Image (cartoon, rainbow, N blue to C red; front, side, top):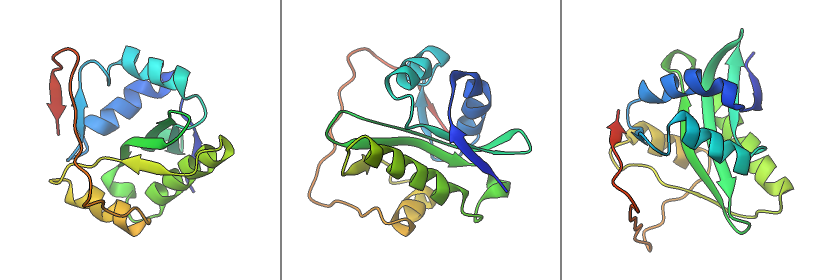
Length: 147
């Protein structure tokens, strides 16, 4: 059985390796660098999780909040471990941690091309919003790493 625990920066290499080998992920060399993830974990120390089996990281999820709404990023489970409820347990851990911090709503963005990811989020109760336009502006140019 997999163990779900809070992510720490020492998990970075294994988690980043998981992300870059997960089709549909959109990473960049700044936010998803070791320094970027370390900064994120310092700001959100209790809302990011990994799933481990026999000491190997088989799943991960980043989440945090701004005091009003929770945000979920970079959820991934190794292909050989999918369909075992790991992603669902990671999402539940995030929702519990956000609830403990007084957050009532969580949001996420998934690429349209990420069919598996979108099917997963739909299955665990996240609905698609057709009434919003997601907008983004980089302060500096970012080098993307698309998988």
